[in-house]
Image (cartoon, rainbow, N blue to C red; front, top):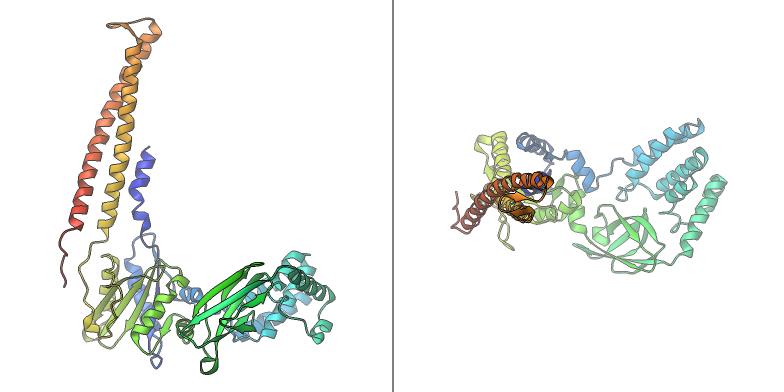
Length: 456
């Protein structure tokens, strides 16, 4: 019972943010602000409560879809794996190729398709010859074989077991009921859909595909051909239609420079781009930082993209470190203040006014008092009922005033009397705790409905 009460008391506190992520907001002509972001990272990390952390910028970039390898690194890994394979170092070759394949799954179209195909063929060969893992080798080929017929020169140059497995995977996919993919995009006038590095169709078109998992990248058409979305995994199910909407402008702008920088001509557009990336980052809070000559501004978004606060600090004599420390304290100590729904975001630094908001401990204390009141009431009620039941048993043992039918009944009556006293004592304690918690709950909820605390 004590464990239950403790769990109820700690439940509201467990809902606090555990992971924070940082991105920078820049205009296309501005340089990246990585140095400033790292200073913000340090200022926030120093003030975080135990159990919470700020994600390193490299991890944020990875979560946003930044490739972990470029074309040259993938090519080098494939070459090294070939050498290891001929030296019968199957495990080492397999590890190198699996790392390169993971990088390919994040590629946005910069790595040639043929390089990815050859990498899959080599990895499948290693799995077949090194450990006899045919099923695993088939899974490596599965995303590509249903869409791509091996050219004859590649078939002649590849080992027969791999070619035969490729054909088996392709035939098995063809035998299953196909599914369909429909992709739409916002911020673009149509786009071309690429799966595993191959163009398969355009937006708003129903594309028939063999069931399975694919890596999808959306590329713009015409003047926006250079725009590319982040790579994402999709799953096609037999007989079903998979629908997907991609904010191409937001994703292309976020990935145009460093992956922890969101670019847009207007700052409010960059803010909206950052909002759309909150789900992809997957942190409890995404902080978008705008560093200007005279001020630093911050927007905070929840895991679903909801805005949970805005802050700004002027730079006194260019002292960025002091402004970052003040911002970190303002962000962490008070609860973030959501901006009015639908209100436009002003670009003037002076227009951002920090509001006095409810201290961060108050919601925890409020809901802790609610949980305590419920728990104390439940325990007190149970003890009262138990004492009443024991009193009934005691009265049933008495054959007459102060007498009992047997010695055992007398001993049992003594134990019941002790239990009744103990339960009544603890019942009184818990009823007192329930009353105190109820008064605390009433205080917090009445104060919550009071006048606003004003502005500064």
